[in-house]
Image (cartoon, rainbow, N blue to C red; front, side, top):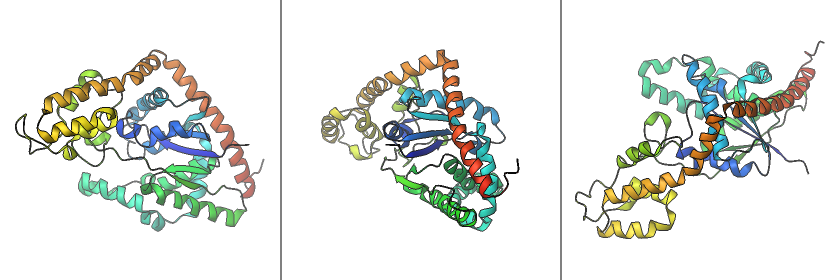
Length: 335
């Protein structure tokens, strides 16, 4: 029985952190066993707000690919490819841009939220968003339909983007015939991992993340600076573990000991320094397997690039088939 196509992507703007691992990226490792999986390194989309820093995007394509391989993405099961090396995606983006109004793009809740975030960070400069930034849902629709993606793993906050893609597909098919596959969201229930500072989101730009590539010394430094219960002044003071980020991360990598940790914390029988040191040991133990694989790929960079090249070639075959059908339907297949 032919497997359904699943497509997702990740922008190469930095290394993978714990939030990714316990969230969407960790879920992809499970999904790769049951679907024909296309995994895009979305470097073109990364350029929408990193256009002035192409070196960053270029460097992170390799970093991200080797991170994904190190956490268990299997190139025998997944078409791991680079977006910019599939020109058919750019062609589809141009075609689809005629099917969507600027007003509709500005109404997209996800786009509105991200524009508001830019304004909050950069003031008036945040109003100077580019066409590429506002129009990235159109590019995303091209990503999905180029490979006839049926299921798109997303969280609830990304549903408006999938709905925009569905609208574009319906509009295209209503004009040119039933050519494109209308995708369906595959809602994931992966948790959002909090940052070391207690922020509801762990993020690259927030300075509150533990990255999988962090060495033992850096992991130790970050955990020693993690937020704990501010009401606990002295070592023997009782505390509330529910407001302590150290306890929060124990629940991720030290589950077998959390009941004891919680009780000792509430009774004042556990000091914060000792608790942090235990977490440091557990976190480094948890990251050990990833570090070994990452070291292997760092020493075999050509292997990573060969995997990317092969995955991109496979993905392009599928995209070429789609663009041929699209151009035929649009009556622009002249030769």
